[in-house]
Image: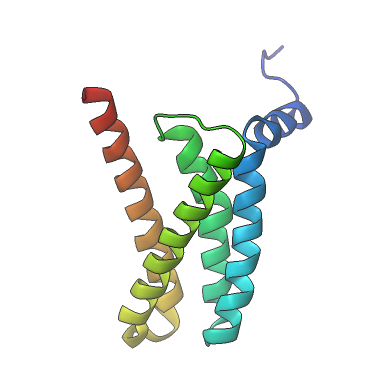
Length: 129
């Protein structure tokens, strides 16, 4: 037998450990999805932006961020990270429009890569200080 807890228990623990982060990221992702759909010409771009915010912002917070915030501070951190992610995504999307249909994918991959690199560098700098 395996020592792994059931999937239901793992999902519940993951969603409730940092509920402020999860809820804020989900709300920010929905807002970004609808906003990008209004201004962008690609439904894929809006979906990938929402995915970058809803999935990768909380993951970066849980895995790389050296401090754990509670309540409102965690929500503010998440909204700030979502705004930075949105700015990166839109900027890279605009720069890669020459790639045609690949522009949303390029923006997604580059944005997520920058998220992880910055979070990892910040974590390393905080640990060495």
